[in-house]
Image (cartoon, rainbow, N blue to C red; front, top):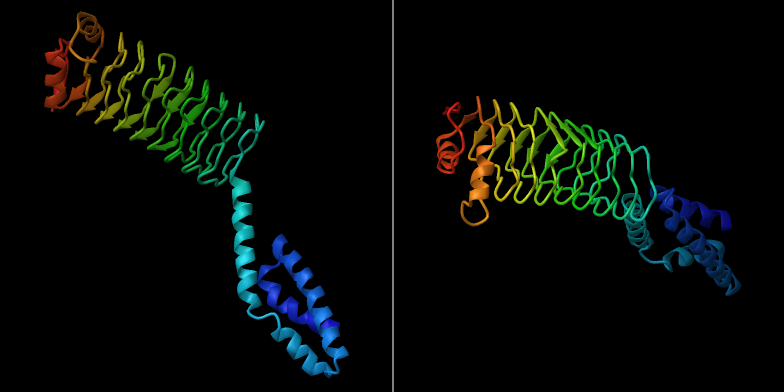
Length: 288
């Protein structure tokens, strides 16, 4: 009869094979049922009656198993998405899916995240130098206050990504469409942008001095209070772009605006009027 109890439990637990906590529950339950069956037999019950009463004594066991399994799987998922306080330099995360992952306070120096889906993940205060984010999905990710020096972002998906106040020396963005990305209060003087589209990007209070944005596209972008000495927008497309100073147009800001090159750029009438009113050289601009 012990085998019959074992066969019964095997059937009930089959859908949850491999879930550790459920396996432990099954072992404990089998021991309890065997003890209960033995007590009923000692009371004079026949085999079938004792078996039926033993099974009836556990009630709605399937609901209990389901709850235990769901809790166990939830905990397993949390373990698989939390990489905080870890030394994972040069680790291979290429192609993985870790949505809403936690990568805080860790070393990912030289790690490969190419092609990974990291939607909603946070890397706050981690070392991500020379990391490879090529073709990764970084939608809604927090990459603020990081060292991203020499990191690679080739055709990366950047939507509502926060990269504010991070170190981006020699980080390279190639063929990227940045949508509603925050790059505020960031030193971007040594960052490389090639063939990018900036849509709703916020560069407020960042230093972009000497930056080359030639031939790239800017839509609804804010360069307010930003350092723009000797920035080149040659051949770029600008639509609804803002270059507002901190409070008023000071002589220093006026002189800085004059160092920006817009030769061959195409822009809408409002952006053109905005720049012309601040004294920018827009004599070689096409207005659409």
